[in-house]
Each structure stands twice: as structure tokens, then as C-alpha cells.
Length: 229
Image: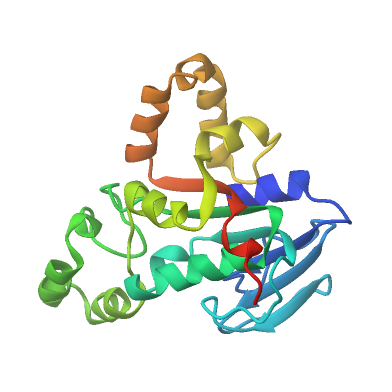
């Protein structure tokens, strides 16, 4: 979980972190920061986390509350009509100098994002629903209720509504994290470190953003945090 490797590297005891869609919080535990782990259904497993059950589109916190918000592999499970309220709420609860770290599977990748056949995420959702009869019953139900994939371009357009600065972060995080927890990320880090001069060219990073299966964004200057609620 690459963004957790990053947040664990930069966090400290003075930081306040909100992990939205945490499940049991296993990836954020031990960060040394004050962490609130939030989900629609939480599994309170770790003593250093404060667990809260809530909807991410209606966060029970005051405006301007957190130094960091992390939401990993969550956006693709939020119905399209609720994505905007979800990001708006994150922007609201972040401090004006806070940072959102967000990741999701790139729907333009032809692999298997969340239990679907290769290439299925490329289909418009209306087509995917009509063709769901070709899936197993479990996969069809999962697709209908839990899979609302998004592309990097779609995510950028959404995020820019609520943040003054939106940066594609997969490459930079790979470069900044000292030792990713997963072997696959360590291998990718080695490739990115070797190809660092190439990634300094914006066109190369833009192409990587479009085709790489994992999309991570670092968002700052939240627009909603200046609004009084």
C-alpha cells in the first residue's frame, strides 16, 4: 500500500491523520501520529487508532481539522453521484495547509481491478451492467454494488474542483519512500529510480499516469477548508 508507506515516513506525533475507508487500519497503525480510522463499518483491531463509524460523504468533524487525509482504494467503490460530496467533505476537514493522499485502480488498465475480467473496467458502466450476465453471480453483484471505476483524467477533474493543487504522485512517492513494504513496489521503485531523468519530462510522466494500473494523487490547498460550517 504505497501511500501508507509514504505517510508513515513523513508523519510524526504532532500530525493528525484521517484514514477514510480504513477497514481495520492495518496499514496506518504504528505511524506515530494521532490517527482517526473511519469507515462505514470498522473493525477496531489496533490500540493506537481511534475508530469511527461514519459515511465519508458526511464526515463528523469540524472544518479545518486534519493535517493529512488518506483514502486508499476507496474512490472506485463510491457511486459516481456521491464522489463529489465525498471529495468535498475531505477538502472541508483538511487544514488549509493539509494534504490529501488518494489512490485508486486506473480504469484504463486492462488488468483485473477488483475481481473483474480483463478489460471489463474499460466498458461504460451502463454497458457493463447490461453485460453482467456473463459474470458469475457474485462478480455481477459486486460490480453492481461496489465497483464504480474512474480514470486518471476523471479523478483530476473531480479533485481540481476542491483543491488548488493536484499532483500525480505515484512516481514521486516511489522515489521518496525509502523502503516500500511490498516486494512488487520495491521492484517498481528500482525501475523508477533508474529512469528518474525520463520522468522529469512531463510528457513521459503523463503517459505513465494514463497507463499505470495504480493511480495516486497528492492534493493540497483545499478550497472547502476556508468555508465556515
